[in-house]
Length: 135
Image 1 (cartoon, one colour):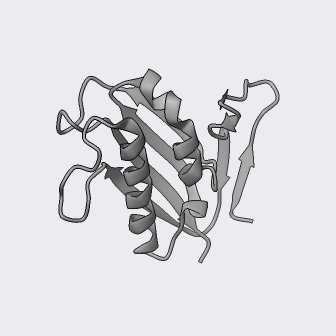
Image 2: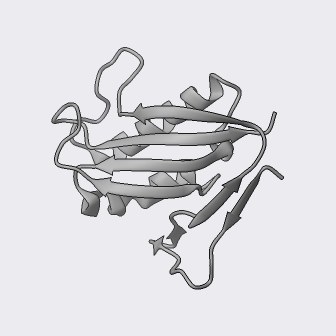
């Protein structure tokens, strides 16, 4: 098994609205690593999806992550680590169900950071990811 995920009993498990948000520890062995640049809520034509709408943007970012991973034969289930940048962490945590729809299939190790601004004032969330292919 190339990926082992652990929730040490001595560390608190982060649950929001009934959704476990991440594993504390992910051990990845063998295989090939896939590094995905930060994905924003942009459509294929570059337009912003859901300007100033956190829920719509989390969904678009999830879709963009799927497309990026599928382009190299990976899927969301192959994720081992994500880093999420948000402009309003309180608003972000109101929509963990959408995040869970995408990242819950892998429940990777995860870090979420509130930032002052992303590359455009209408953008609210950006996620970069690491996946592991076992082939």
